[in-house]
Structures are given as structure tokens and as C-alpha cells.
Image (cartoon, rainbow, N blue to C red):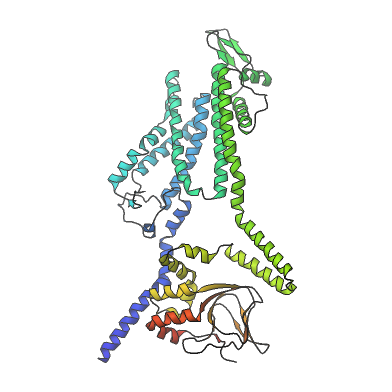
Length: 533
């Protein structure tokens, strides 16, 4: 029987010790295992927020890529940058009819096409989030989903149109057709817009995004404005040039006029360079979008006037949408700062109204400033009230993890016991000079020092210095009466204390009787405020 009892006791201790591992090494191990997942979450472009399965990576076939892994997230950023590159160059090349004879540009565009082609291959092997919120890793379902969604657009956007246009013997009509087909690449911006939904909650990101959208719209409109002017500057029926055209006026003003070549079929040549034309077009669209324009570049033909009217309507909407939100965005960005200053002003008015002594006023202001710098104005209790009970307990265990790991008294606590204790703990921030206990006060709390230094003063003498890892209070679990503090406890530096009330601790100890015995044996008070030194 003696050996049987010893074996049961050993098994119970081993089991309890195994439960404890989740608070020490297992926490660090879990953090290391999922470090890449958290990095991917920070960089994640997708608007599909992952549920609890993200804590443990689902099992996938070897050739299947998780859509939230670091590699796929980095690849999505590369595709995002190249999509914006395409959104800038494609309208320019189509409008200005640039034939890619430059080898360097041809190589760059070919590399972009290859990367887009590789992206198609990767999308056939990348998981996605299903309608029920689960990760779909079945290769067949992945292929069917991609074929039904973005495959056609992605395929059209990666065809090598520039390589075809680079050949000298390509017919002008076919070349123009292939150049126009490159506009299909702009449909990729739909994917970008969907991916950027994840960042809409960040004011700075929205501000940058709105400015980029405004600049991109001005660029596209500038390309269209030039295309209309280039089409109408020469009257094809009479083979004469319209001298009132803005392109003709621009050429005359910068010294590069249009000239009629009488040899051969007789064509108009010359005119302003493409750089000058683009800068002038962008200048006109910017002035039209942000104001009514300055009149130095003005529409003269019917087509130009119709486009100018449409552009002014678009500009008014963009101006109202983008610049109208700037004030709101800045208010959101500085909302916490405004709340901080409002609180400081309220406290100053309170101290002035009730004529609080200068020394105490300085302590109050110092405490408020230091507390705000630690919490950033976040109300922990308010956040915890939003969460359900199970999640709230998990957060509390995390917030009190230092206390549970540093003190041997908690080593044999079960998971349920630790969660119950964590729910009762409170975090107290103290400024230098704050008195945590006055001599003669009732000792109704057990305090664990997480950071900072405190001094214990008895009869005007410092009898102890408390620091990180120390515990002070009273042994409630051994005494039936409420104790009176025999000393003052004062903060020497900024301190963080984790405090649990007497009634809350006794309630947990009464329910978890096995833990109560080990807690009573293993918890050693650094300073017992019940006893005089």
C-alpha cells in the first residue's frame, strides 16, 4: 500500500508539472514556431482574415503553398509593385504609341511578363479561404477556384505584347491592336483594391493610398488628353493642321513646330517632343482636377471640350472624396493625442479649482503622464469586457505570465486554476513617491513586483528595499483576521505591480484545494506587512 500511494503521488506530481509547461518553455516554443505566421500576418495583403486555424498550420500537400506564409506574402508585395508599374507605363505606351525598340526597356518588360506568368503558376498551387472560413488545400478545388475567378485576366495581362511590337515588319494596325490589348493589364488593379482592404483601418495608409489614386487618375487622364489632341491636330480630310490646337500652340511656343513634308505622300512631321507633350498634358489635367485651370492650355475642338467637361466632373468628385477625407484622417490619426491633452487640461482645471497643494499636484500630473506613456490611453478593462470569457482568461494569463513563471508557488497550478487566478489579478502602475500602503491600513491585497523598486519604512527608518520578483502583503491563507500594515510601502521608481485581492485569492484557493496546499508551502513573502521588524 505504501508503494501504491507513493506511485499515485508521483504520477499526480508529474501530471501537474506537465500542465505547467504551457506557461514557461511551451510559450516560448510556440512563439518561435509561429513567428513566421505572425510576420506574414503583419505583411498580409489579403482581406481574408484567418480564424483560429492560423494558430496551427493546416496539413497541405508538398506542392501547395499556404496563402499567408512569408514567401507568398512577400511575393504578393512584388506583384503589387509590378502592378502599379504596369498601371503607369501601359497607358503611356498605348497613348504615345511607343514602340519598344530600346533593348533595356524590352528586357524589363519581358521580365515583368515572366513574373506575372510565374504568379499564375503559383496561384494554381496556393490555398484560399473557403466560404465557411476554412483553408482549402485540395489541389483540384484550388485550380477550379482560380480558373473561375482571376485566371483569364491574369493570362491576358502577362502576354508579351511588347515583344510582338518590337519586330519591324509588324503591320501598324496589328501593332496598335496589341498595344491596346495591354490595357487589359489594368484589370489587375481590381485585385490590388481587394487586397488593400486590409489596410483601410489605418489612417496614414488611407492617406497615401488616396494621394496615389489621385496621381494615377491624373496620369491616365493626361494620356487620354494627349491621344485626343494627337488625333485631332491634323484634319485627315483636308490634310491640314489645326492651328488652334493646343499641340500646335505648344510646338510653336517651345520652338518645335509641325512641318509639312512635301516629298513622298506629303505628311506632317515634327512637333513637340513626347516629354514636353506629357508634362504639358499632366499639367493641364492636374490644374483641371484641382481647380478650373489657368487657360494657358485650353480645349479647342469638340472632342477636347467634351473630355474637359467630363474631366472636371471627375475632378470635382475626386477632390471632394480625397481632400474632403484628409481632415477626417488627420483627426483619426491624432485622436489619442487630442484625448490626452483634453485629459491633462481637465486635471489641471480640477487641481486649480480645488487648490490642491503644489507638491501633490506635481505628483498627480507626473502619474498621469507616466501612466499614459505606458498604456497609450488604452483602457485594458474596457477591452477585456468586449472579449468572451474564454478569450478574456487567455489574455489575462498572458498579461500575468511573468508572475506565473517567476514564482514557484504557481508551478503546480492546473490550467483552470491559473486562468481563474489571472482573471482576479490587477496591474497597478506607481510613480516615484506613491505610497502603496500606509502604516495602520488594512492589508487586503497581495502584491507581486514586476518592475521597479520600492522601500519599506517603519518608524521613519527604511527596513527593506523591494525589487523585481519580490512579494509583499499578508499570508491571508494562514490568518483568519484582516491585518493592519506595520509599515509604509513607497515607490522609489516607476513600478508595475500585479495585485490580487484577499477575497478573490481565498475564493480561488477554496475551490482548488490541491493547489491551495502547494501555494501555502511554496509562496514566501519577501516582506510580511503584518509583522514588525
